[in-house]
Image (cartoon, rainbow, N blue to C red; front, side, top):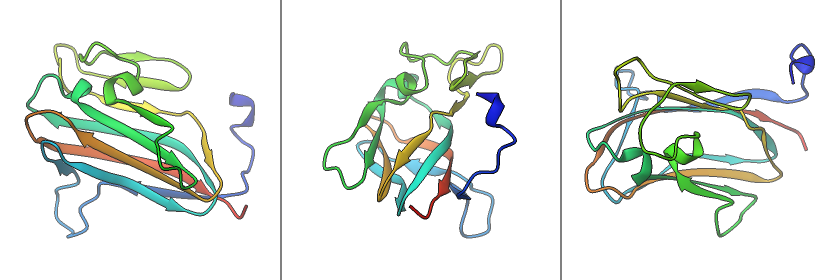
Length: 155
């Protein structure tokens, strides 16, 4: 995996994030109870290289109640559909610090609800990629911070 670290890639590095477009300091999105938001809709060929989430929610079950869906190349039904916690490797709805080659979660000791979550699975697409999140819980998710890093390709 690391042998290609210094190899120049063909694409152009891009990022979609939750940055505050008003220029203020609220670099996160709110996802209301029952609401679905599109985090990314990328047109053209490319490869998603990194997804980072940090989520601030009152409901302790948010890792099971927030569902991430990923659609490739105009698909009507998602190729990925699972609770956010499960997607990032913790199916028990509690944050935990761990690391492996393609996923990690980093939480402060004693912190049972907030963590940084990273995914490094390469996710190629030919014509478009769309990533949504849905809050299936009874309470609003007050702060959803994210980065989606990808390479834009010519073909």
